[in-house]
Image (cartoon, rainbow, N blue to C red):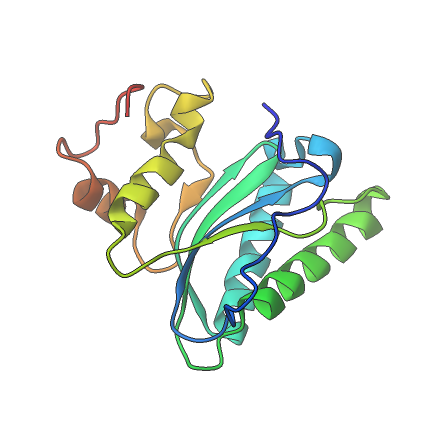
Length: 174
């Protein structure tokens, strides 16, 4: 299922520094909507590099979900020097280069889509929405049946127990 977000990312906030202790909801799309993330090895390599880049650039990955042709993230800066554009560029450049070396094809669409969370926003609602994407896309009936979501700070079980009224049960209407 393709996300129709165009060729380039949405414009960034003009006066916002994208630096420091902020939380961001991000979407990064594959080049031309190719479903590269149906391949477990590609997901595993991309996820490992995501976690490495996040650690090195001062970000915590509160939640992620790899869909066939895009990735959703909830990332939080953990220091005053956490630089979102640098973090995403590092991750996408490293994974994109490795992918091109192996397949001869581009992995990523340029740029990314972001939303800077405000203090009053419910990050748990955003995580619920993020990890329920495979259900809404018709890929699974239960989030436990989809392997490509999780967190760099919590286990899947902890997320489900914390986020849903009925632990371990998520229905299509979420």
